[in-house]
Image 1 (cartoon, rainbow, N blue to C red):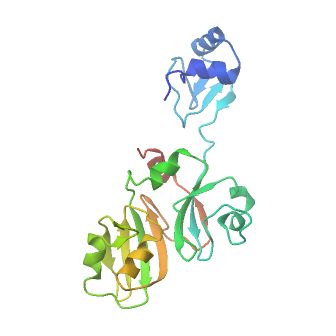
Image 2: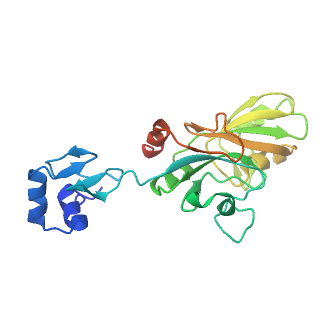
Image 3: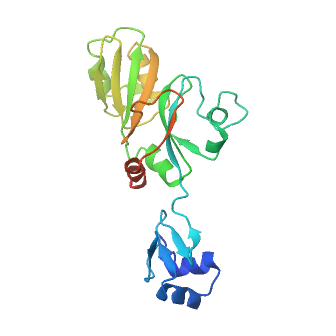
Length: 233
């Protein structure tokens, strides 16, 4: 946070008043920071709300956060020219949102939708290694050493995948937790081990999960989920 983004600076910038008037407004209790009267020239955070004489200068509630169960067949692109794009699938009220956590067209499951640009790199950056959990169905029966090989890393795209966690559910399906997101990673890993993915569903991203959502459903994130996103470092 820039030191200049203290209350007085922002009152001058957004309230179109002088520096002297801004200081007087603070002293006289005309300034609200997150709905509480503020008398000190403190720093204002990215998610804070600032009011002068009941007029909103900065709206910390301007950000929207949703989780979306992407159906199979929808492409993760906001290009309107593509008929089966996410842009054309979502109704107009969500048109200004971007998606976090790309899934290929044949895959389904959790995407995060938001207009908060601060969370994008926090979630997808390999530096943060956010855990993402998937359910996977395979074409052929799972080999005895499949779990060990997957967890220890598979050579794809000229690199060895990072260690991951695999839970075998039955002869043909498993759950996997990844901390990286290489292009079509799970499909490529399984193919490298001689098997083919027939169904793939992302169940969770960090502390946000599909739970009992249906394909195509959109839900507003609860405050715990929002706080987790905002507090990622």
